[in-house]
Image (cartoon, rainbow, N blue to C red; front, side, top):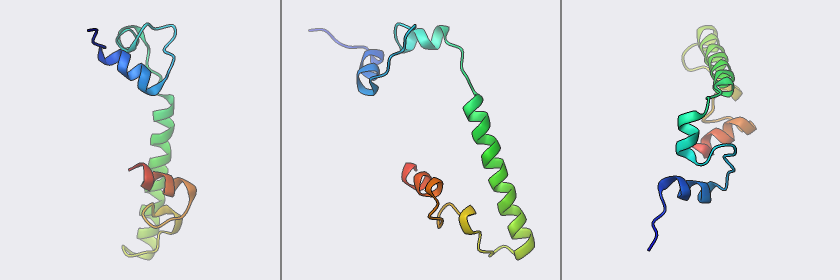
Amino acid sequence: MRYCNGDEVLQKVIKESLSPYKDFSDLLERGTPDFSVVEQLEEKVTEMHQRVELKKAIYGENADLGDDDIMKSEAEGAVFARKFV
């Protein structure tokens, strides 16, 4: 009986080509991470928090945050965020 290691199982489950890397272990060992998407996301989150804080400062703590309120907004991004979590 042959057992698969975790890398093989992950590659089968997510069906992702790791080329030029042999497997996830090889990717972790030799790959160079690209944090540009994370940095862009951090900028957007910071911007959103600043808008929320500004609205609260102007209109009070119980202000209607509109589309900035992820829990109430029907904006596509807010709906996605709720489903994702």
